[in-house]
Image (cartoon, rainbow, N blue to C red; front, side, top):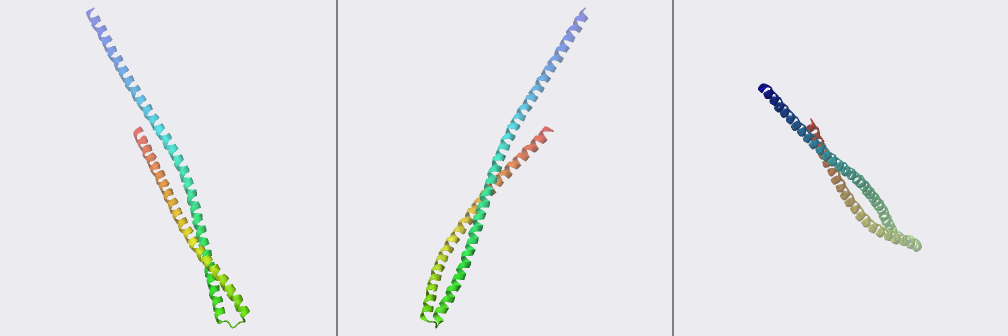
Length: 181
């Protein structure tokens, strides 16, 4: 009987030890799973935030691209106006010169001369107006160029932000892919 008691006690101790190991392994497995679920949850939050930031950034980028396009159009319009004013100014200046030569070298009757002098006065007045318009147009062109540059700088900054966000997401994706294998 002694032997039977020893065997019974041995079996009980052995089975208790095995049962305790199973509980420890199960507990460790559950802790590992819980940790992984928590990490996945954190990754999901991070991804969601990054996606929202990306959408906001893309929206801002689109708006900035529209502002750059409008600034570019304003600059083109200012340049075209500048060219038109300068062309008209050259044309009027040539006409002034032509009328001055005609008045100074003319042996026409006084009435014809008077008509040319009146026309010459009108042309000179128009030339002064065009010179003033030319200066204003140059100022507008300079302002439009500055505005375009400023908008392009903002656009570049937004693109850089989007690139950085893209690289951050790419690196996070690589870490997740590498860490999961």
